[in-house]
Length: 181
Image (cartoon, rainbow, N blue to C red; front, side, top):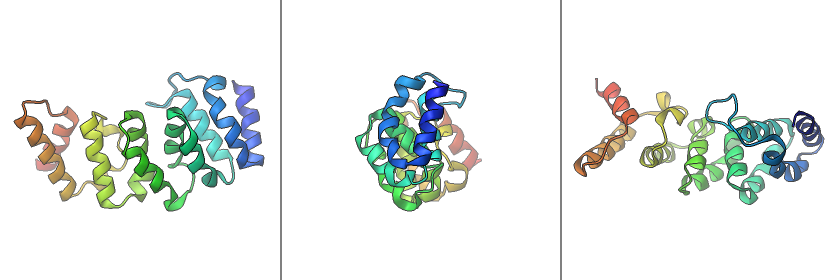
């Protein structure tokens, strides 16, 4: 794996278009198991390293996402926090937030989303995470992006769950208690 990844890093550093060939091969060559980065897989780490190494990766990322499998899409979403794409990554985050794939939704709500999404889109992403059971600890920027409107939305969600006799996620209860107390 290490030799292959080093060779792939050199290829993409020389020509970002090489990402098109090496990105899909990462899972087979590097593995798909857990990595030392909490919540990330080995292939996530390797793919983000490839994106960081490729000058011009930002131009390749939309197609890597569009034509990639779920693991490749997840890595592109994670890579948005490491590669300067400006506002171009918003479309990818919006697409991921329209899915029902918890891995993509969680990856979409990384630091890129916390920095680049407008308030309404960020609130939508947070509420989607809560609705899908994605831990709030996985949502970047919650400490600095929580506002009264988001709290109102989260309180309404909690009230609806309670009225329906359903459990309110513990991390949501904690957040609301911290804000109210």
